[in-house]
Image (tube, rainbow, N blue to C red):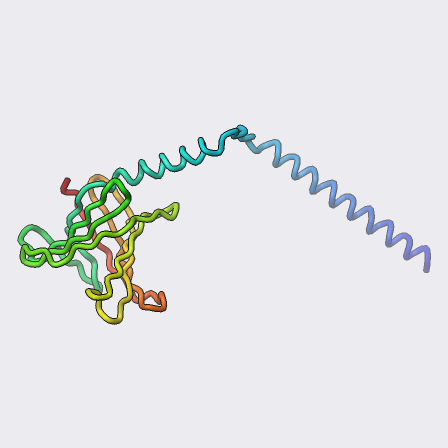
Amino acid sequence: MRVMIIIAIIASVLFQTGHYVQTAQEAQQIMSQVEVLPEVEDIETVVETVVEEDEDEYEELIGDWDITMAYMDGEYQYFDEDSGFNERLCFYSDRTVELFEFTDGLQTLAYRMDVEYDDTYFTFIYDDTDVLPSTIAYEEYMIVDVYDEEMTVALMFYDEDDYYLGSYTLFFEKVY
């Protein structure tokens, strides 16, 4: 019986050693395929590069954008110069945006917000509770796509508990 226990222990040790050797070989093979990145001596250079790339993306937004179409409650609604309503987003180089709304040619809303970037999307939040319906605490605008002077924006609605209430999809065209 003791011999069997000793043989079992030796077999277990040999199996574990073989498993570790195999794992080490696989790791070495993977490491040989990985490109070695150059060492960065100055972290500020890396940060400046990332910020410059982010700035380049934001540059596309700077200017005035007028709404052309909205997908709301399962239907498309179109806006042009003859429409009684217009919404304009004005993006500025200081990473702010101003939201304007016009009804029958008269300005009914002007609100300035900071534009945030979360590594994927530019967003800004409209939270003027004096204007918003009582069930909505804030609206979050998320820039989904900018292409060829056209912009797609997801407008999401939230209550005071940050509960998502729904969304619209807005389409804008750059005017200048």
